Length: 327
Image (cartoon, rainbow, N blue to C red; front, side):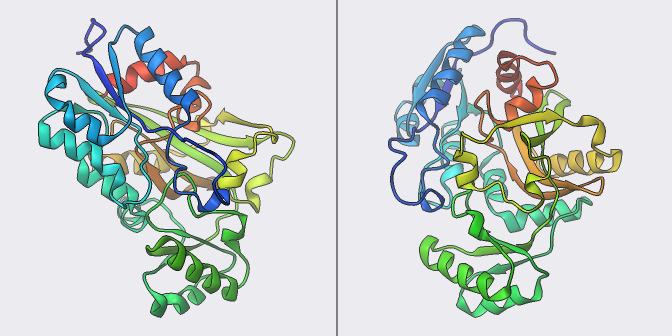
């Protein structure tokens, strides 16, 4: 049963981008951090729905103050930078100190961060996903030649398009091998090479709500270019390009019953998730899984929130349901 009072205090763990002018955008490691405006909008909205809120910038601050928040709920949008386990740091602290928190546990965070593991889970429940190869070291480089062209070359353990630019869409195997080598050297982690799926840029977004799950299916549209993503990635530079008009439209009616059942089966198999965005391509009437983001960008202009606001929700209602997902 839903509570009638506003609910317990909220602890938000969110680091903020300090500078946007450090090196090429695709190679920056701070892209999973939030800008100041996003954090302030979130804090203001939490207060507006009657919840007390505290903001910490780092997992260490949360750990140092854990004893103060035994009756609170923790919402992490912490991005970190280098550690491949960075998205699991806040859940690990919460589990250690027995704090209630929204979103996956440590194990779930690691599964979501590893694109290969999450893709195998997607296949297990019947979702389509493009064929792929994992390049773990230089001896694996030639395995990329077994894939159909064009291919997408990207880091295995990153989010927010870190390591992904338009050059990540390659049209010959030599370029795929060269770029995989560069990413191995630059980011010091395995590289995922997968066949490119031309189609519409879509997302299935979900919020846990007791025994129910609120969902929405939406498409990212480039105004004036309806076929923009047929040959283009939604890469770091494209996301940062504010001069190109983009919007999100609801397309619930285009998600087949079969794909919806598979997506819900994926979430059940994944376990506790709180709220998430599952990115994919919609082509020939079918959803093709790319990756899951349990800590989806929660800004009002992000596809997670807009997936619901385009169905008539307010941003305040989205955040209220996210906070209630732990009830």
